[in-house]
Length: 253
Image (tube, rainbow, N blue to C red; front, side, top):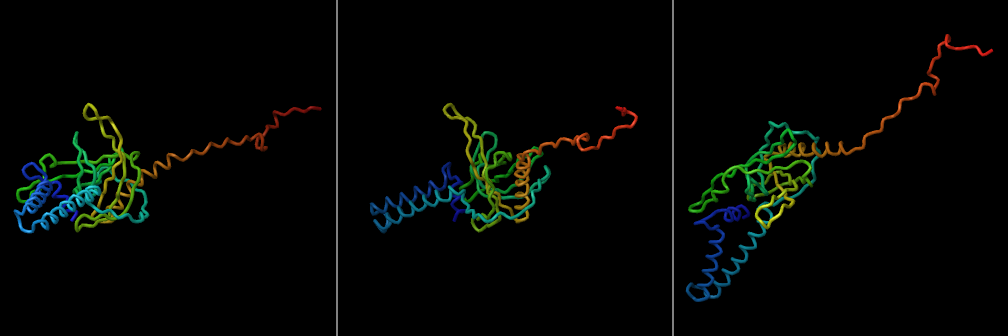
């Protein structure tokens, strides 16, 4: 159900989202039923209103969850291990994406997770053209989309599974801060918290990403530890370890 609603919400027909066409059709049939232009009269009108309200509720319900269902589970024990800049871990990502000056929310985009030498993390995904009959995805959405974040912006990492339609995979829910630049005359720069879901085809890939992220936490904790004060070197003269040459002594008698 979530997958169907997601595609209906994104696809356009004659420049209008498909969901708007469905809304209009339900209201039109309901109005025709009220004026007895279609069989059923008030029953048809009531049924269309129920379907209209249910359709709106379903869209809002799944839209607030990025059309996926995440179930948290205990985080497995892994040894912190950074990825090399050449490593690319395959993922399906859901959340808030940006490219140049554009931003959009997407669900279950196929792509890769990478970490650069600067320890900046990147989710790199591709939106491919999709079409169903006369409806298609907006052309402005087609292309590469990204999620970038540094270790200092990560607020929490949760482990679990995520379901999208009939697909269920192990997943990491990474909550991080995003700086929204000023756009327009009356807007202002602000910082918001977003959660990107990284689902992996195998649990091994999920653990590799987790180990890479935990490496940042481990390094941060090590840097925050207070350094041990240097112990002063013992004074040899105080513990009798200084040997005085016999030639340098004088008789006092």
